[in-house]
Picture 1 (cartoon, rainbow, N blue to C red):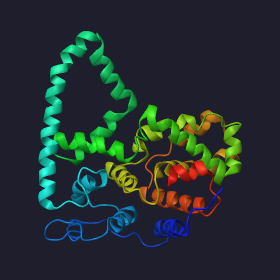
Picture 2 (cartoon, one colour):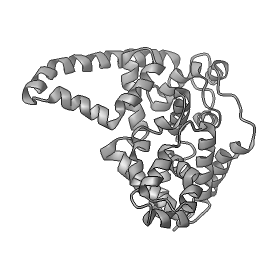
Picture 3 (tube, rainbow, N blue to C red):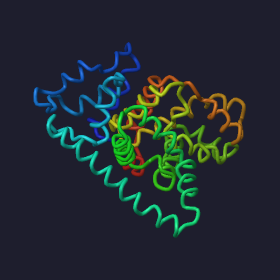
Length: 299
């Protein structure tokens, strides 16, 4: 087993340190515009901007444009003119995809009798309809919604997709609990058997139901998009949420169903406090001899 590099340790301590200081206001339009020169090229390092987003978040007036950079819709190296061209291309490509779908839909309906019903059920059961709604509320045009959501899935390594990332997230969550909290892990293996695996909606919806406002959800999602303080930060967010019920679970010797109920009652959370707790968990993680699977997952 190996420890993470001193540079990463320092970064994690810096990321966690903002829980100890007064919260700073989110990045507003004036500050955001100051990140770019007169031609629209980035004049400040991408890394420093992402750290600021982690610690402070984005003002609603900035979020739409900033997310286009965070998702990869726009390149961080692009100029204002290049971004106008990109947006035009995205619009045309979306229109072409819609036209193609209109042409093949009758064929699919003929080949598969329950095509429409099956298609709608797949979106509903995955929970994408709830996630897409937040993108529709954020941007004005359909092509922006489509591409931002597609790039969001790619940027987050499809970790909210049931057959791709959700199972991996749950397995790694178990690994983190085993590594950082053996006492809690032992209880979860016994009386709490199956509780962690039952938390898959957390990842499917990216914790959307844990907060009282859409702004809180966007605040968490933009942190995940920064890649700060590490990859797959969503697992440490889930770990931090489990820690909120830890004392109750152990004191009351809860079983799996009761643990799941306690977890489902985690609503109206403070997003800044949750992000801070997850940063602290990361700082704790990298100060130890980290097993290779965890190291590969988070770096």
